Image (cartoon, rainbow over all chains, first blue to last red; front, side, top):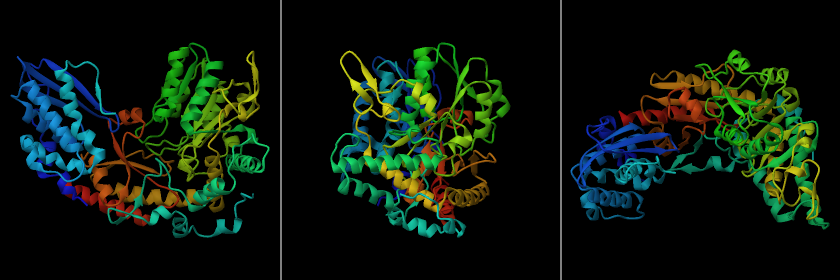
Length: 151
Length: 417
């Protein structure tokens, strides 16, 4: 059995208590809202994008430790990346948290700090918590529109 | 088959260990820890008598009902109709045909909204709900609002989760046609003063639909004493199988209502020019029903009746009072729903820890609770709380399990310290 500390690593707890880039941000030009109907968690992602580069990204919302930490880490990780790179990172992150069986973390080196969320793999009910902000960011890059739902 | 309560047993102390032995799943472990199942409000576990009765139905008596002239069809039909009669006795309905088998309470409410609502409500007619309804007692009426232009009015609750009767009564107008209200709130555990509610509604000429999902497992329900026009509940919360539920309706109302779904079993005769419908209850039971489910529900009714709802209620009340006292004594625990009259449910949060995180940690301690909005988002909104942890108790829970919950909460604190 996996230890709970694998899920709730110090970095996760720290980011959930002190989320980075929390708030509306300044000069954001892409916005989207996300909602996890299962638990009522809501998140808004504000992206400042220029010429295909994410110059800044902020988020607001309420949620569990996993969703807040994931959103916070996401903002740190995608800032300065191109939109294409950010989407590719989401794909890799999604692959990591939904993969089954033994895993070679070396293959996911580019995820850097996000590896702290790899414990979510053993808690399938929590994958939606870990990916809500990412889905919402992708929607913001797509131009917002309807609220993103994890269900 | 007799469903009479053994009077001698009723005077004996409640033997929870004997009850627990009837539920095989309660002796299993999860993550190497003894299971502490505190999620009966979502779905209750099943005593082996129910499972055995369903096995027997499938292995020894099974055929389609109300169709074949052959032996097994008669046997199966008899077993299902016996179950209907048991349910009638259980809620003290006047007539057996007032018991309509549906999939669950949700389907029962949808049936009433669709059939009675469409036939008898007009634009501008008003339906009174309360803020603490389950989504299943909100959304079907919203469908009706979209289709017919009926008006939904929502009765508020006080900070302790009790219905504010003065405000409720003020919502009535000459156009109020229905009150659709829970008997016991699934999110807060509040028991509503249902007899007063029905009396007030009837005085204003309105009908009353009662959502009894969280009531029937925990207290003796008498639909005639309540004078409910409709009363719905699900089998799976009453220690019976999932996929079977009950709509009770007063015969005169059910008779006046058009069918809900069309198909076999609900017809009297079918010609392409015109079909005529079967009598109650079959008019509302189109298609092959959940035969073994109905029979299993009958067995569940027998089971709880053999122990006695009054004894179950008294025992559960003690456990709930103990849990309320223990959790209430914790400085970092906030209870939601502290009304005087409550049943079986304790909704709470711990510190500022999100209920989902707490739920995951409790789970690893073997404690199964529900976390989230409990399909009752308006009442969560009322308390400004997107989610809570809900411990819900059944006839098999013990004080020791409450102690385990309290210890497991300490583990939650440790991880989030």
